[in-house]
Image (cartoon, rainbow, N blue to C red):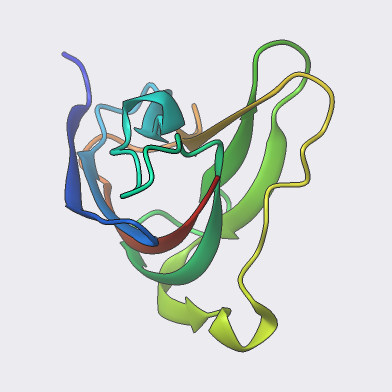
Length: 136
């Protein structure tokens, strides 16, 4: 049995992107791309989005603190760069800081991954809604 994962783009405008991620774990862990910048809408000037900045996040993670879910900046090669580690239920608003921008490390793709650890227990649930700022 595989994780039951649903990812959705709820809004893809010129400046903002809102994504939703829901996972019911089968206990094996796994990685899911929640933002693929190459698939996002261009802006009204025809420019292509190259990275996103995390502006706000709402989450509910039933896993224990020993098996939190991670958001990661995707790299085409090398060790992925953690963005946030999420456990329990909460929300964060980074808008007063201008959001958390992609550090653009060597081999960055601009994409965002959600990683459920192998320590996850079957039946644990992960729900994440993010508001991103699009960068061109």
